Length: 255
Image 1 (cartoon, one colour):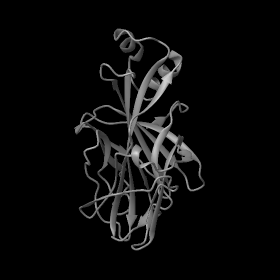
Image 2: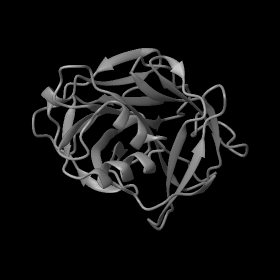
Image 3: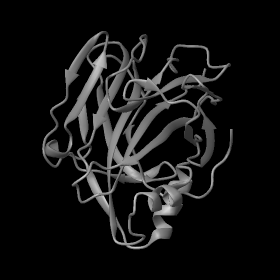
Image 4: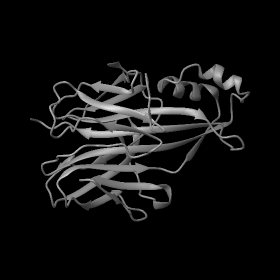
């Protein structure tokens, strides 16, 4: 991995107040938007969350948050195991009044040849729209925290191949990055690592030819992984581009 440039976009993630809780304890989590793993807690809007659920012990439990809730997620962790919180958002839009901001975003998220691609589509260099959606997970250890992540069918997503609360992490945290159910080969993964003192470092990694990445991790740190797909918007829409953001948050316990 190597250091990332300063952030040029806002990430979205699920941030539990505690990544490990005892069985029967309250599990509380925020939805956050920000940069460098620091951001504001968001209000829960059911109409902006077409999918919000918890996966544990082979069960899929839809989560019906209440309008205006902050923290957005609050429930009782009634079953031991690896809890996978899943959240998707409805499309939101952003208007680019100038080209450079869009070019900077594309460069930050490793979208190659964006200027040529944009020009080839005959698009204006100012006053154009992009829509974006978020597809995020959080891994929470409840009790003994045994279990595994799996594919959820989100349009893009990380699948954790390592359980950070029970597995040996000396060889790193293994993940698979998917888009429309297929591995994303040679895709950039932005890794945000938050130390116990709150300091955040950012590094870039890349998936291999099969969409896998193995990421070095440290005990006592919280992590956020982020990867973005950019594609043309369907004909006839106001927006000319769509971005899809995959996110995965988890912690590595002190052993």
